[in-house]
Length: 161
Image (cartoon, rainbow, N blue to C red; front, side, top):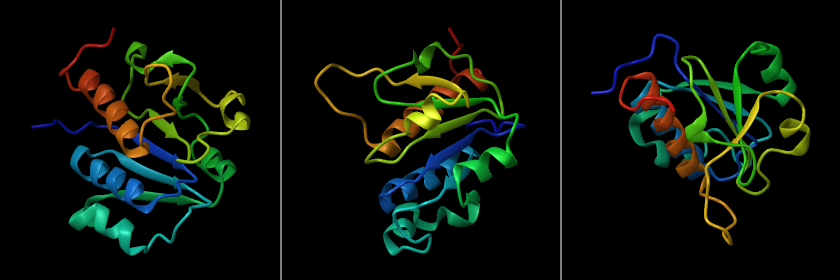
């Protein structure tokens, strides 16, 4: 059984475009106790049928915050410790020592996090290492990998390196 954190992780999706990916991340949040933050613009309606279907019957267990912009999100969490995930650069995510309350930030499926975010000093840039010649992981898969690495460290399931 997973021990809930006293200060949950925040999984931040910036401009997600594909409803089932966001639904899968919502389900991940429900089963792990993480908080879900969506930053607009979204590529779908929050009431989208595919979004709801991917999250199945877990939506009532998801702590969801919706922000109209990156700036609005930053204003609400100015002191948050953020890890900005991108496909190719930064510190490998398993070399990070996560803390309770950290924000794990992911970009859209089509364009990732923009240079303004990655280079803006908003957090540490990190990646999930991949072999050469492939573009990227599926968004919900990447969020799951990062979340369970952090939770493993924080709940004693896996010590940080």
